[in-house]
Image (cartoon, rainbow, N blue to C red; front, side):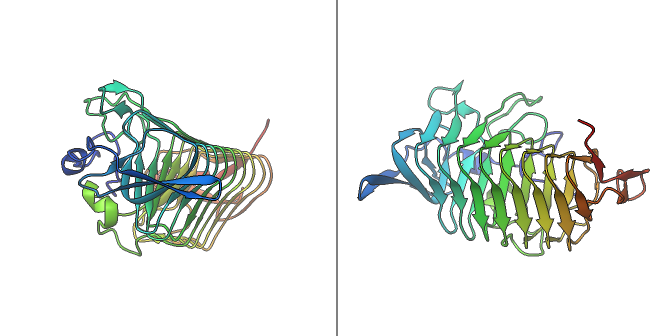
Length: 302
């Protein structure tokens, strides 16, 4: 069973070395281009920059940047540059010790080649990095007013997040291996991607990812969901379950094929059509590999 990035129930991974640097002062620089100001949040995994406050323009993350200094509001677009890491999965304000950290992007959020992003956290399925309680209780929400787009990113973790537009992830991943790498190595974790408990106003498209693990669970998708050609090293991967999809759901050419795995999930509920590996007639053991057969998707009765 894969031990993922920051899961509860004994799966939380060692982050002491990273947390030691997250109280560092922010490294922020501004440059003007026409009438739009672009701010840069820059740091390292040992001493990340801190993104906090309101930015009346665009923000670029270079190196490592954490949202753990209170609310951060970007009035323009936010881009995680090539090889960078955005950690917006903290609930507390490290400067005051009180709960206050959150991220709002009024434009688009883009994760570039080889970059990684951890967006949002919740007590039940993705523990906040700074939640040190024996029973996790903290949460932090991310709000994106435009699209969330990833192009050949190393890994994208999205929990407890609202996206007004579309979500897309094309290519990338850490390859067909579960060896820790990049920013994930700071958490002793394989590189992977995951979307859970999110509200998405547009459509979702995830295709061509090569990684250790990938899943989409308990999301509400107002548009369509497409999950195509994703290959994973972990045989438990490609869990596309318990989502509500208002339009169509299509899954094809994924290895392993879409399955229940060990998630304990339930079928997707689809208002439109369901096709391929996520079709209405596809039956899979729940849990894999020997549980009772259940449909991967069912028709909405609403």
